[in-house]
Image (tube, rainbow over all chains, first blue to last red; front, side):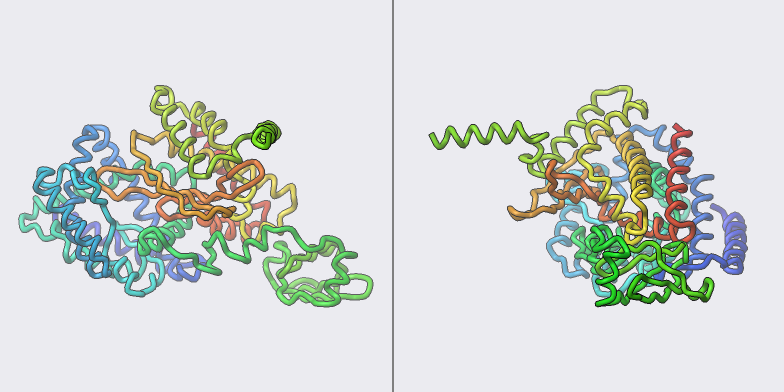
Length: 322
Length: 204
């Protein structure tokens, strides 16, 4: 890419950021994504760029080159990457893994024709996936807010910072011959994108809202990576399948009719009250009488309405008025 | 004599049960189905050239019976599940199932002779929930982990969540579903799911 093209792209991008920030009207309801307005704009920008240029080129690359050659290209970049993975494994105190990475690099460089063949994997030396963001995570630094980076994609404050360090020590960024450097970086980008073509097709199908789907997957994925696939449960986290609250939610209710519920509620009123979805989550006040239950919603009419149906759970009650 | 009685009762129970699935260990079950499906794809030229109808049928007959969609849907919907009426719950299960089958089929269609490795099962004898771990090997990249969370039911072991690269599918839908319900209620989520399914159906 020549300088003026880069400047033009920069200007377009800057205008885009301005528009995104000023049009930041999207109300954010995810505590991990306070910059949702900006992120959504970046996400559409990346998506448009991908659809217009990167994906079509990657598709062409995939259809033109035989699988064996493409594997060779992937292996070559992956081999160079093993050095940085060794450094990160060492920084995380995983000395065995670091030594494996060094061995992988040595074996593949010498016997695998400069890394084009992945002999090490066949020998049982497993490929790892490490970067400086993961190292920071391992050191106990939280991910920070979600951040969609232009041209790069989903990231977080921590991982974005980590990326700057990754790039600082990325040998391909430091090739002195500029055209060679750019060709290598472009080839790496296209090769990576080609490897992800299947995954993005699945994503298109699976997601109701691609932005949220990618964001939540990103957090889950990074957490899993930091723990090398053995992430412990996060009690109370919205993404934990084994959460106790959730188990309670999908279990059977304690009582389902006013007659059944009355004696229980008269004894021990349920403190945590969540109103039916129609009332949009505004807490309401209910009173238990000898012959029935009445509900008073703060946003609706001030009068007390008799409850016609009630479902009582261990920690919650759903009331409905006519 | 005792042995004979034992054998008799054993043969009786195996007849009485709808499937012998109860006796198959969860990891053996997943491995068996996975190998069978992969073998079919490998041989079937129609599937390889992208015959979606055929892939759906394959998933429907071989894979679906081993999934517990009720639990998957309940967990994906989360705390709002109890606010859904039985009819709404049924619709949610149906629509979510259709979406997952379609997604799964797309993933299968892109299968290209990768090697799938199963890891030894880490479970105690009395466990009713286990995680079966597998890996899809790929050249020049870290293997993709594919883990199946399974529960023991009277009809054998059933999958209730799938984790791809540490990303739980069920958990990943929860945020979207919660937002959808907050904005448009449970019927709104049903509508979104069904229009997504219709839109995907139109494309194929």
